[in-house]
Length: 377
Image 1 (cartoon, rainbow, N blue to C red):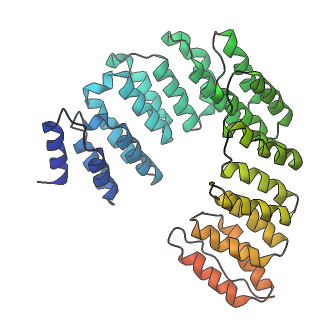
Image 2: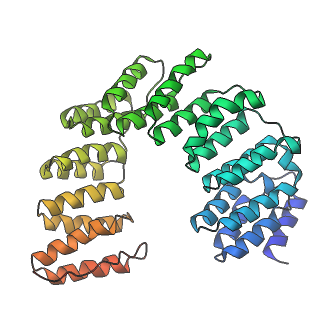
């Protein structure tokens, strides 16, 4: 009996038990041939219990989309329309969301448009899924159209998720006036901004050099009855650093403990970037040590900023150390940044050391950098 048949048989004989999700996922995950993944998925979908496994759907679609096998994403999702669950809003929402995350907006919109003919209700839940698909597929221009016209057309009232999604879209497309306008509509329509609302605006404004507008929302947030999280503070840290207010950023970082918030790698990166931008090698090193001693983990942005600074300040010993540590941490730093270390070593006639690093980078099983040895000066 094949693996697929065994799993389906298990489903059909164990209705009262939870389906063996790990077995299903492991079988699909271990299959390296993506065409076979599609075939197995469609076969498994014949079980109504399998069709409840939203995580398996998400993981499989993500895998196919990452490989740019969009025809196969379409094949397995369109195949789902034959089942009775397609008349249930939750199932339709799943397909809309999966298409959106795959960047296949037209398909997501089609699922939404087909809902009435399938006698599937269109509530604010599916409306929000469509808005989310717009954002995930980067069809930001569609958000304003849908947000303004669809609620009346399908008789739904936008909720705070709807407003937050619209604000995110407008921030992503750089239409900050529209984002500000939508925020103003929230309370007028009997709703209250939540943590996601404020974080989205703070990240949008501070992250795009609109410091004063970010400060306006920071003040509003501090007066709201909502507890900030680490993302709230990280947004302001980025804003302060972008304004070269590194002293204030360090002070804000120091307040995290009193707020019962634990700094993450983004908190450290914000401060490290501030010192890197100032060319302050000593402080950048100090904060890197703090990061390594914390519960946070450096990421590719950490190493990219520090390697650039180390090379700029001709501290090649530290640059080499960072180079090796980035690979050890499996951080996929831009190859052009890694090449800076090689070029610096060759410039100082440290050819053999440079060759070793080229070998390490190019043989790295997590990513081949295609680094090269420049001519010695």
